[in-house]
Length: 87
Image (cartoon, rainbow, N blue to C red):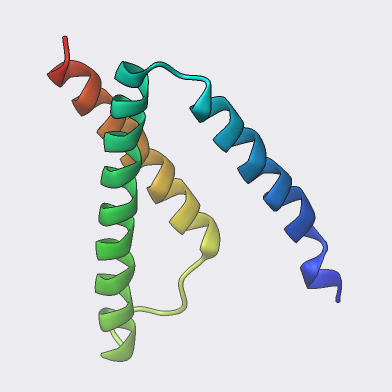
């Protein structure tokens, strides 16, 4: 039960992010979309790769904090690439 305590705060955070995204103009929405797509796809690929290596007993358990850090880093990279593309 204690493990479920962060869920309402995370749902609230999702609602805030979506509300702020809806207030952006079309140009900024496109940049955000591309940044999120890069973050989603690269994080998925990294998690898949890590999972395969874990099944092969090459690496140990994955720290969830690393996933969030990787996702943030790949989002920043995606944002920089999209912003540069539309200059």
